[in-house]
Length: 125
Image (tube, rainbow, N blue to C red; front, side):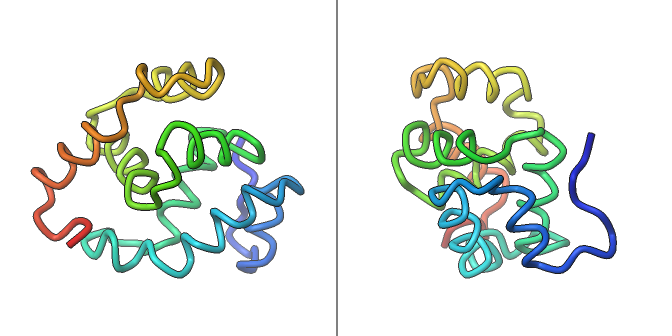
């Protein structure tokens, strides 16, 4: 069930998604600063990343694992994984399995980044 509500402030969203995990909070703050530039074709800007995380029910330490371990601390790869899911390049179950097993080989974030760049020429320019 989604945590983000229509009347939430940005601080509410950060708190709800990070669930008190400082690593997740850092990633989310980084998203607010860079996601719009990374994915200029996103209709909802950085908010789209937050909504996608909420839709996938990826919160707290799972955000940190996705960013740090599966995306090798690359905010570009992190945004690409979320966008790749929207584009149908990777399933929700694959993302969740990779997070649960902490297995970069399952997710292959670098390949997803390349696929998203190929599909969206303005991505991560």
